[in-house]
Amino acid sequence: MTLAIDHIGLLVTNEPELGEGPLGLRRNVALVVDGPAVTAVEPAGVAADEVYDAGGRCVIPGFVDSHTHLVFAGDRSDEFVARMAGTPYQAGGITTTVAATRAASDQELAALLARRLDESRRNGITTVEIKSGYGLTVPDEVRLLRLAGAVTTETTLLGAHVVPPEYEGQADDYVELVCTVMLPAAAGSCRWVDAFCEQGAFDADQCRAVLGAAARQGLGTRLHANQLGPGPGVQLAVELGCASADHCTYLSDLDIEALAAGSTVATFLPATDFSTRQPYPDARRVLDAGVAVALATNCNPGSSFTSSMALCIALAVRDLGMTIDEALQAATIGGARALRRNDVGRLGPGSPADAVVLDAPSYTHLVYRPGMQLVARTLVAGRWW
Image (cartoon, rainbow, N blue to C red; front, side, top):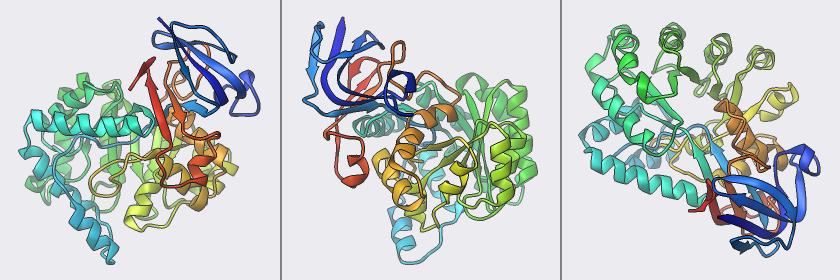
């Protein structure tokens, strides 16, 4: 069954060979879909089994959210209120969510995940990475990955999130558990392994041990790096060939040089900096150095409880020094690169039919009209969400 999204005023393909500039812009066209894939971009007025009239609105590739923590229970709004009153963010608050998540049933967690995934889809996110990290025992981490795997192929073991209470003062022993027991148990349920390289979480040697064990299991690696202050995380991520270094709030010249020389994507999470009152990273320096960048929501209960990629784009333009075009690409094809994928984040013949119809004539309205719900329809694998 074919679907045509017809009378598109402005189509962003992210395929430069298909249209104008790096975004591959096309005007007054139809996007033709057959099953889960795009088959063609044609002049407006095509015939199909189903025709959706975009009425001159803008269509963009679905957002690729390469960093989220969607499987959790509990509420940390009091912590947010305290931060707004001046209490600094600390990684240790994660243990509050760990306790609530351990206590929740599979059915409760699945229902919470379904609600958050629906919210993400309504915000135009069509590809989502989901981390574990709120169980911190072998069986709990495996069950969180199993639940995440029911809704996405981009699952990440984050056993090295923080040291759980029962291992207080025994961080090395916990890392040994992650490397020798948790990783083998979770290997069949995840594509990626992540670690939190930060004061209050894990140091560089501990993260190197976890990610080295992951590589030996044939799993991809990612790293939370340089969120709360300068540190070794970004350069460690490049050294180990991680797909992405995420946060990158505090970057030295040496960090940027390392990123520019490697293949690691710098993933910015500006909604986190907004929520934690951290300074915003200088993405302009990173982009000017030729580094590949991504934007992601980091949706989680403690430091960024939002699934609005539009908010992240607006913050990236206003506070990180990115252009609107750069921010849109970072939230689409940039997220795909951070997941080492070349299929999603674009709209051209053969690509997945993941598209967003904006209730606006141009993608610039994502920044021009901040805080407005501009996602009119979301298409995921050729089906309306």
